[in-house]
Amino acid sequence: MGFARPLAELIAQFERLPGVGPKSAQRLAFHVLRMPLEDVRRFSHALTVARESLGVCSICQNIAEGETCEICRDGRRDPHLICVVSEARDIMAMERIAEYKGVYHVLHGLLNPLNGVGPEQLRIRELLARMSGGVQEVILATNPTVEGDATALYLAKLIKPLDIRVTRLAHGMPIGGELDYADTATLLSALEYRREL
Amino acid sequence: MGFARPLAELIAQFERLPGVGPKSAQRLAFHVLRMPLEDVRRFSHALTVARESLGVCSICQNIAEGETCEICRDGRRDPHLICVVSEARDIMAMERIAEYKGVYHVLHGLLNPLNGVGPEQLRIRELLARMSGGVQEVILATNPTVEGDATALYLAKLIKPLDIRVTRLAHGMPIGGELDYADTATLLSALEYRREL
Image 1 (tube, rainbow over the protein chains, first blue to last red):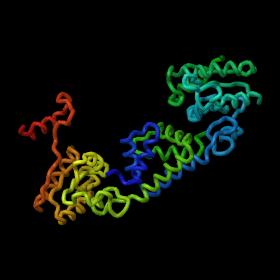
Image 2 (image 1 turned 90 degrees about the vertical axis):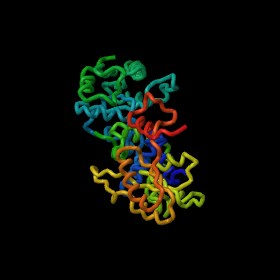
Image 3 (image 1 turned 60 degrees about the vertical axis):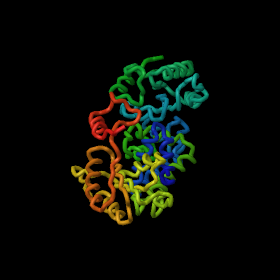
Image 4 (image 1 turned 30 degrees about the horizontal axis):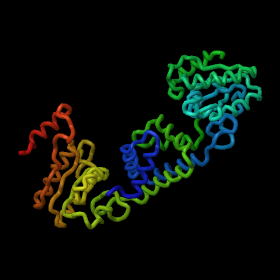
């Protein structure tokens, strides 16, 4: 005899999430049964609202609630300075440094030919389309990993001929580390010492 | 600038789950944004359906979709043999042994006076109410921990005077385990309850 059907279904749903094994899924599902009904409804609602209302910004490809994201809409940001990151969550890491006043571009991945990720799979065409708008500098802030470095070099080769300054975050960050996990001081130093490519 | 509001809300909701820290919550929320819309709706639905449709069985206190659980409704189960467990998920462990044909009783916790869990906080009154129905044996299958043992002893003292057989799951070496790795308490118990061959 198994779990009651709605419980089994909830466990199955939790198990589909990344990093959630059968035991964790059971634990989470039983936790939900003990949560106040109002809290469960809020969680349930947050899931569909987030998925239904969010898309990508037509300019920078960041997660956005409307046509463009909050950062691109913000008149106080400098649209001539673009920081290129791999994932939308990397923007949060950069935003912790109040010093950065430019905008972003999210690639949604890194070049990885062995896994079938070529330039066509990334938002590179959208990045190049922005280059005609008087951009003065492109900061390549992809992770300092093999894929991140390769992607940065690839982009530098495309953008430098357009007479736009191309820089890379300084290697104040630990090699092999992830931008998403960097502390503010390390990131600030990496921004400060960015180098010409 | 933070995450778009619906995304921040979803991250906050994931963070409220047990064992989910800020980084995991972000990872899960971003995963949801990449899930097919239909899958997100199914997950969202499973949450509220499970919470709204499930309660506890009026007989054994197991998670149940209706007034009573599937096991209590099953005419092939022996209602005169009751296995007492701490949590509803412990029933799943017992059900993996096809040999067990009795029913269950879920205490929803273990005695733990230091944390304010006394007999009144557990479903003990409901267990005693079942004792008048011709019960022949009560198997105490609470975990072999301080709290589990104390709870089992407490229940044994209440039930044995009613002329009902009270047993406890045997303690000893796990099948396939190595003597070398067994903890002292387990070994001691295995020695104490050694059987004639």
